Length: 169
Image (tube, rainbow, N blue to C red; front, top):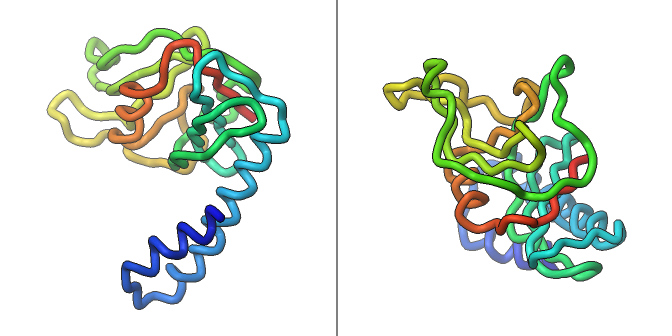
């Protein structure tokens, strides 16, 4: 069902590149697999949102619903912790949030949302003048936080309630 919706959505846009079109099946399959994983893992949340960070595929997946009936609403490319400072794995809860951090160190990460101690979801790294310092996503390069595109970090900051479950595998 989800794959059919994706295919209909993408059929509205005319791509000439066959490589882009061939990836549509991969996207649909990933969404189906992610939804199946979450719904068969007995994951619960005290809110109607749940986040699953799939470190193997560098994806932050946002689900809405309840135990056994989660529906994926967003799947964002992310960066995770490097080998020397890995992103913690396990089950956590959304905590505090803030507009930015790092200014005193000469950079800014925007829209942070805590999931465990000093571990956060936040934007890519910006210089103080607003230019991008490090915009890489899809890599193991952080100090353990989960980096996202600015608009994705803001979506989590704006929409995911405190206490929501975060599962990191």
